[in-house]
Length: 136
Image (cartoon, rainbow, N blue to C red; front, side):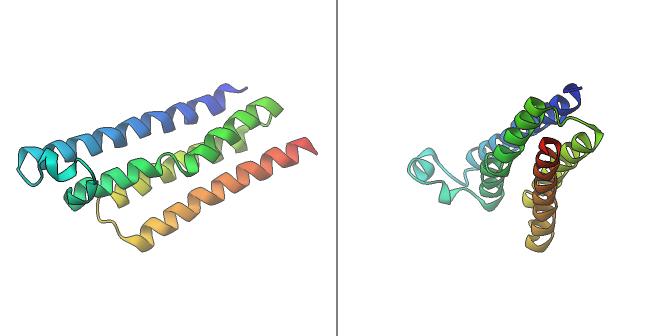
């Protein structure tokens, strides 16, 4: 049933909106506190405080490997590779994106972030393997 894969895809889209909200709130706070002015960031966002820049970097991240995730979801649905294992991998990938955001916009410990990112990539690779195996 393809619905098993629709839900994690919708969850990943929702998470992207959550990260956008985090970025917006941090930028709004920077303006309200006087840390930056419109002129400071009109050409480049480098003048935003680190917290706002981390949120913006994480928002950009939501359009990198998630692109592969959405492609794999669509391909899996198209070829009928929509079993429980594929759904578990899809949910696991979404979970890694959430944890990655929490680390990136929180402590920003690079080693932790890298491990979570690698776990997400492993989920994507295993989804790809699952699709290939279903085609054999």
